[in-house]
Length: 332
Image 1: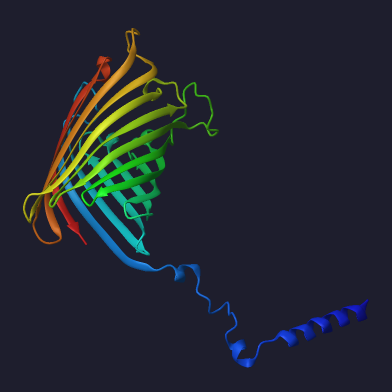
Image 2 (image 1 turned 90 degrees about the vertical axis):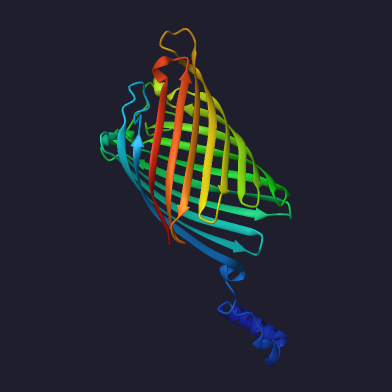
């Protein structure tokens, strides 16, 4: 058997000598150490980094969003950083982190800290068509009342069609998963295994992206299907329709404004009003406006105002809220 193996190896060696290329060709043979990696083959056309931090103070007229309408002064600190990259002129990707800390002076149990990480990828297939997706992960911590703490994630995908340079149409689908980390479902179905109170939402969105010379408008609509593993009143399943409008404008070289409006109508599947005569329906309207003034090239002063109200066939769920604030934002 040993001699058979020796003869076999001699045969392979002879075969290799016969087909061995000449010296010049041997220099050009494949060298794994010199071969470019996958990352080296990807051409990065541009990179950008943007970050800012801000501080503001203001007054919230209805911290708890209830009929009692108890207000409080507050302070707010925020930080944001975003990195973007363009690959091969057709693929863009972005990764961002946002931190916001809100402290109420009179109602500490509603003070909270928000951490948000988002990632997105967009591929331009043709001159007028793009598609992509991304994900969002958020933690919300209430330092003085941890029972309110929750986390949520939202993967999503979208398609976008450019009608012309000023008008695009975008459709999006996302799956939002919210977990209340310190609460258990009441009479829940234990579908999720670990006994935590959860809410799953399917969100279908459609919007127009309209861009002018010094302004932009984003009208759109969301359709939401919400499903919870809890049967407690505050976590009933519901469907909602939410039309909205976002707009920005540069009034002068130093003054800019951002405004948003949305209306949401929620219909609960099983949740009834206290009188038990019909199922609850909520109609919420929210409007916001922010005006900024550039003090320097990197620093701006901003004033914000928001108004929100809920009209419901359940009187205990109705509320009105106004929030006004001002502060400084600095870009790095």
